[in-house]
Image 1: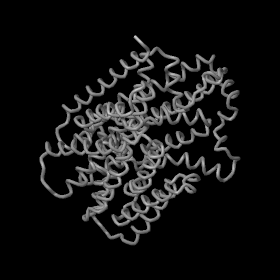
Image 2 (image 1 turned 60 degrees about the vertical axis):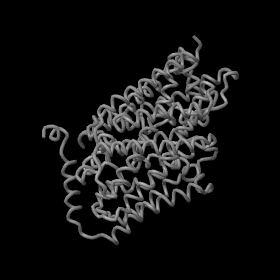
Image 3 (image 1 turned 45 degrees about the vertical axis):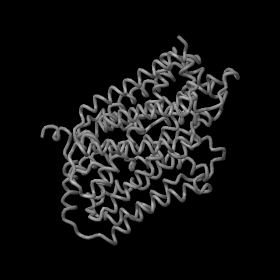
Image 4 (image 1 turned 90 degrees about the vertical axis):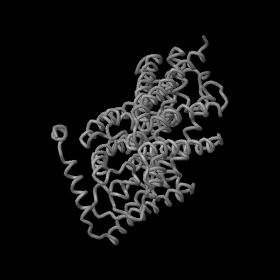
Length: 506
């Protein structure tokens, strides 16, 4: 059997396992709350691994190692910022959001939470938030499909469209029928696969290059500044250099507003589970990120030994090392880990987009529907978003990384400040939230499309700040006493204040 055949067998086994998990989830889904939020019954470990896998995507296995291989540890600031942001998100958002979304009329989506938390009877805030989700996520899902098509094309010589269709059909299959439970359980399997791959590749690589000392010497010889966190961006340590580091680390700000990540907090069994979830999730993320960084550094040392080994595309360093160091079947499992990263993100984004269509747009019309019909509508929503994303992805020249950075900034700046203010400030109003959201979204679009601005500072920073300022100022101008808001806010604070041991004994 050829090497490529071994690799394909491994990938087929992986894809079949994902469909099997999706079928199991299908048998567990009975109503819209199950389909969209798993009945609020996720264990902390499941929620943590699911959030991590749906967050990282192919960036962790391809983008980050490629950036560090090309430019050194200066590119690690993105990973540092994201890890800190994830910890803060689990610490300060997870328990309160889990509590408040249930207390505030059992909100199961971010747009519905904003509306119910702020008692907006006009539905304008909810519709605006849903529109932002649909616009950004349609392109976000499309970027994942583009990455999948290019993966099969570069790894197996497949036609780009056939590779994209294969991943789209499999991912759509387990998401369409399994819903949130299916996406979550497959995320756990995919997260574990990514974790094992990111630990194994650099360890074997260090052994292959002669040990830690030889690897470090090889890195220093090939790229003297590669091990310096403050050496890069092609400029001396000046104001612009500092802005570069701030922009990279500012990716962590985006966590507070990513719907496909924070929806996992809403699905936890209880607010008390957030503590265990934080420990598991951030540990997974930190170790995985270190593995990605180590893989790139090992690659610098390994490929520097022989000019004939030089690679043309830095983002393939993880794939090339796995194919060199492992048996073809094991290398196929590593390739499957890359697919896992892409598919886990696509499935999570499809579910959130579907919830925006059904729960936040269709249901606010006020029509009475059965639980079974709502689930069917949810599945139809997944299909609609997937088809539109697929059509966009037919343009194989689409800039995947730029699109992801843009969407991350859009969600982080438009939703992040409002999530934080909703959970920590009683006086936020629907008018203030809507104003801040619109200003932030507009800032991301204008700043992100202006090269002279975005080249020097990531657009999430000014947009995030403006959202906070506008939301606070407008809220102070439009604030009115509301006993129900005060009552729910106090109930949320009281519930979160209960210690984990007390919560489990009630």
